[in-house]
Length: 88
Image 1 (cartoon, rainbow, N blue to C red):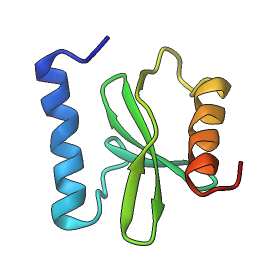
Image 2 (image 1 turned 90 degrees about the horizontal axis):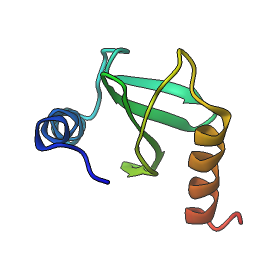
Image 3 (image 1 turned 60 degrees about the horizontal axis):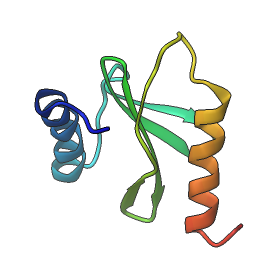
């Protein structure tokens, strides 16, 4: 299941801003979540990511249903990061 075009464009704007400027200061749009995991945020959409040198890697996307992230989404992002870095 993909995102509707309008929502995909809105989150794409955040990716482009990070690529062009290198940072997003608004914590409502980009936030440090845990350890080395950050997330792009737009409404209820979350796209976890991590950084290696100057590159950002997106792990997966999900709709946040509660005030806090589900533990399974955080574990999934950390697992994907560990696989990418060759730690698992």
